[in-house]
Image 1 (cartoon, rainbow, N blue to C red):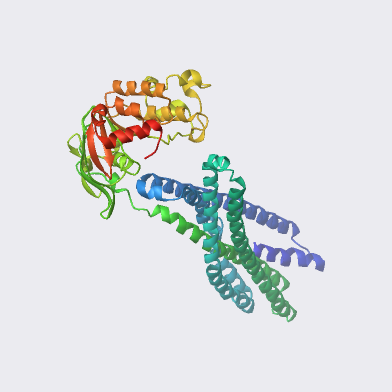
Image 2: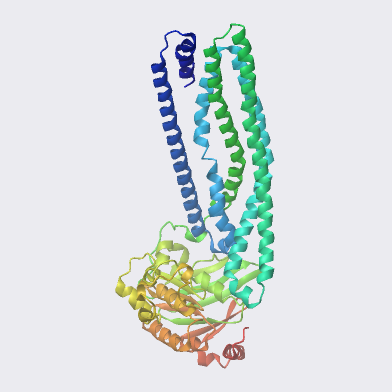
Length: 541
């Protein structure tokens, strides 16, 4: 375009003012062509840069989602949900923001070379005056990286704190309201938001100063070129068209310098975002999901389980130690005991959601480490007190992508005491439950989650207080449904009715099995009897 402008000045504009014949129509055609080509180039560049950035972010978010799903459960539970949300949302965006100017910043390197070569062809002094700008740009870029890294890290951490505080307030709204702590929580939240605001303004002010500096450098260089070029035109060394061509070439050069500057300004921010994303991406694989060399299939039907001398946790402070328990195929076993005794940990071990530090687990005489994880997940299901539902219908939550038939889904809902949901809910089993099941009650959520665990012919069903929000009458229906199901059931419970309905009860305290037997038999044990009495009074041990 610079050569076209120079030609138009020498062949059309100057002859026109001198009264000579000019080739103005050719000049107009060239200028229009330049405008069209540059416009198409800008639109195409921005479109593909935006598309590439969006795809890179999508891939990054997918990778993080995969890592979160495959992360060991203990590691996942130790992470703040708000921080993980910030990693997936804001940090992933920061990590790829540098992609917006990157294609142009790379492409303009060729423009830079051609512009310098063109200036050298026109006039070497003008070329040297232009090249002198580049060391300034490099030095400013190096200073930018140092200047922005720490403030950007602080800003990203402050953003994660805002996200974490938001999730805490949403999850704890009931507690906040019942204790009348709205003002205190709003004040705390305002302080966190203000900290983020201050850090964000600080980063913005630094970026503004840096961007302004990068914008000024080419303008100052342009003044130098005009001054030097005008003196050389006046001395007859250059033609006016040469000066216009040189100025146009530097205009081509100045914009890439600014773009490279903006790119280098965004680079430290993207580096910080990428580091925060890498915290998730570099998490180690869950050892429990490792594929065995020669996997063995689980037996069909109900699964028998044997826990032998299990220890979970460090030797000096184990969660469970010496846990030994045999569960017969088709048996319904209730795990009871004081708070912190190891019941939920035992359930995690049975579900292969928590690694053991010592001991042995077998499923139907097959060592747990010899069973492929997909086979294990097909045959072992879990339902917890905190029933988790996903955005979708009742039917889709029970199916959960397993391709179950409508008959299987409705049968599972019937076994879980949820058959009446077809009449109670507005659209029956096709009612959308909303995010986290907000459109249904706590008891309904538990029954839907329990139906999900009972669907698909599982060989082992693990229930962690999964009927705590269900009324006693409905709970009796559920226990009757479990009795009909040809499977092994292990349930952590605080309900005396559940203990009485179980084939056997295991009393767990201090991380080990104290005693097992039928509910009526264990009542002769003073520790179990005191526990049952406390449950009946509604006390918590």
